[in-house]
Every structure is written in C-alpha cells, then in structure tokens.
Image (cartoon, rainbow, N blue to C red; front, side, top):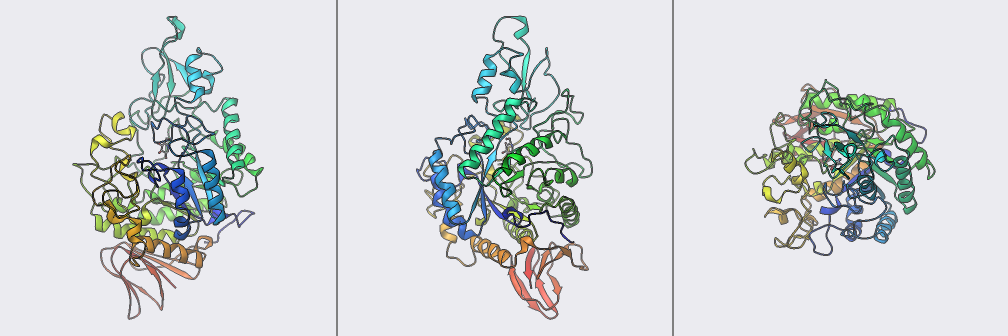
Length: 554
Ligand code: NOJ
C-alpha cells in the first residue's frame, strides 16, 4: 500500500514507540505502596534502554482517586502523594535530556466531584452560571433519561436540594462514569477556556503531547435523548462488529470542533505537539475523523486490540485501519494492552471466543499462562513490525500476566461495587510492577496499593536484566531492530501464503510472519532471521516457525 502522508513527514509521533506509565503502579521511591514522580525519574534510563521514544503518563493530578486519578480535582497541579510540579518539571527535562518525549493525560469529559467548580455548582442554585458548566437536569421521579454509567447503574445522580423550595427539588447531574466524575457541559464557554488554559499551562511546562481521555464523549446528542441500545451497556461488550452505534452520548459530530480548537492552541507551540485520542468508536472510518490534519495526531487502534487470536478478523481490521488512516494521512497507532483491559498475555491464554471484558477473578475460568505468553509475544513482535506508532503498557516488557486471583476485597475499581459485584473490572492489569527480586518487597514496600501475587518477584526487572532469554531483553532487541530497519516509517504489503492463519507481510526490507496455527509453518525463501518470539529455524527451502510464533525475516 502506498502511504499518503501529510505535509510534515518527520513529526516524531508518526513512528514512535510510546510507553504508558500508570504512575500509581510504576515505581515507588518512598515505600508508601504508591508509585511517584521520583520513581518515574529514577527509571528514565531504564525506559531509554528499553528503546522507547516517548512516555505517556496517566493522570497525576490532585484527585480523590475515585477512579484511580481519572477524577481530577485540579488540572494545574500534581497529586501530593506522587510529588510536585517541580518534580514534573524535572521529569520532563530528564526525559528530554535522553531524547524522550513526554505525553500527559488530559481528562476533559468530566472532573472530580471535588473540583472547585462542581462544589460551587452544588452550592449555587439551578439556572446559575456555576451549574451551567456541568450537565444538570430537572426530572421528577425517574432520572432525566435512561443512560447507564460505564461503571454500572444509572448515569445520573440526584442533587441534595439546597432549600425546602419546590424548584430546588428533583435536580440531577450526569456522570457517564462514577458519580464522583460529573460530566462537563461542553456548550459552556468556561469549559472551553479551562482546557485551552490547561493545554498552554502544560505546554509551557514542556510536555510534548496529550492523551485525550474519552475523546469521543465530550459532546452529547441534542436534547439528551434516551439510549435506544438499552441502559445497561456499561461496557463495550462482544457485539456484532458490523453493527455500529455509539449511542447518543458518544462520537457526536460536534466533538470535532473541540479538537480543532485544541489543534490551534498546540500550533502556537509548533506542529510537533501531539494529541492521541482515546475514542472507542466504530467503524474505523469514524476513528479516522479524529486524526484529520486539523485535529489530532493519533487515535488508538482499539479494533486491533479487540481482534483477539482471530486471523481473519485481524486481516480485516489491519486492512481497514491502514486504509482509513491513510486516507487522512495519519499513522496507524497500534496497541495491545493498557490500564483498562486484561493484559494481552492473559487474553491470548483463552479460547479466542472467550470474553474477558468483565475482568477475571477467583472462581472464573483461568487463562493458560504459557500459551498466553507465547501468543502475546508473537502478537507483540508482529505488531512492532507494522508501520505507524506503537504503544507498550508498563509491565508488558516483563511479560507480566493479568493478576487473575486477586482477593475481591482488595479491589479498587469502582466497577466492582457499582455493578453489584458482577463485573470485577480492571484492577488485575494495574498491580504495581515488580522491580526487585525480593519476595517480601519488590519495590512497593510491604503494602502495595493493590496486592501483588506471591510469585510476582519472579518477573522482577532486576532478575531479567542480564538474562539474554528474558522478555525484557526480547523487548529491547525488538525496539532496537524496529528502529534499525525504520519499520515505523515503513510500508505494508500482504504476502500470499497458502494457509490464511499464517499472516505474512512485507515492510521494506523485512518480512513479518505470524503463525497463528497450532502447527509449525514454513515461510519459503532465503531469509536471515532478524528476531523471533519463539522457535524459528532454517529448514530446506525456507524458515520454519513454531506454532503461535512470529518472526522478522530479511
Ligand atoms: C478512560 C480511562 O482510560 C479509564 O481508566 C477511565 O476510567 C475512564 N476513561 C473515565 O475517565
């Protein structure tokens, strides 16, 4: 496929390897069980050696942590449990010193209920300018519409009346997520101003980009009509991939005006400052709208993340996303894991039709760990060979599995409580990273904020450091060779193969092969093996790839 490119081809994010830091669980330097900014600073060299071009740091702002920091109480400061603005400055300059960019997480759909604006809104009466910054509606008896919260239960909470007066009763506010996360009203000029101020504040501090939380949610359909898909769609379930309906709260056309406004602000700082959309939208053509030249830079390819170990689906999604992104001159942004989904090393340890969307806990079917890791590394290697940008979720470079046996009483994800203990949620992928091989303390002191499994020290970075066979060293070799062959800027062409479950792709000088069958597969030709995720040998007439294995060949 000939790649259509936008005017400025050399923007760093087009082919970048970007590492997601989930600060609460990344690295703890004071033993309080929570990660901190000093912990990120301490690991800058580790990240640099891993070969990443940029880090994306999930929210680090002051927050009551009702949703692990995605409930922001102050957009212009750092959570004191994590550090200070001075440390944020130091982090950015230390990253820049080794050539790494820094992306931070902007949360514009909602604030914390402890944000001063929401507190003012509660104190002010209805019809006040303070309330106009959020979505308050009047309704007697039932909530104003049937929308469900993504974390379970209704998307509306009732406001305590301020006075005994009739007109103060029966007011509700909208929260697409937890009640502690009231949605902003993006029809309001103050809200626009808050976020343009925010972008300038953090650009002035030196950040290179923003990951935009719930990028598809900021604008709601006029009149807030009922969700005809039903109210209990708390999670993007395993639906028919050809039926597209994001509902009246998501992917409304009006949302794009906001990103045009933001692009203009970022352009004051040059074309290199980037925006990456967290937009769970269908089909890929809708996703492409977010990365038109005058809007954002990247949009996570969640369709790819959701493909599972399904070769036919994978082929279709790769073709669709390359085509759609190419149409608007944007790179594809590949992603397999993040802090909201079961780690891919565990997803691939199930039958491909088995859904893990509700999380995994005690009493649930458990993944095949060995198969999951083997397939996980194979899919990772294949993904890193594709043209575009690619994300790593912290800990995947250690081969961490999802924690699937966490005691339920340790869970912190609001989903668990709000679904009446039906949906375990996302804690299993958020367990603090093991740095040290000491079973009593892998680096988060005696009491990590989420408990680590007893065997967690076996994955410790310290232990993998000098082992040439470790997952950590596999990731290092993979990023180095990706850079060497410039695969991120590369090209894409399917190579015919007589079994559809073996994916073979040509990217410049490299042939990528992914054997998704449970038998060895021979890739015919005279090749050198550049890197493989498992057993891969020269045989007569070609290279033989073991089952569930990928390789780069040249
Ligand atoms: C998406 C974030 O990734 C997720 O962790 C969070 O719960 C929701 N947005 C709400 O902010």
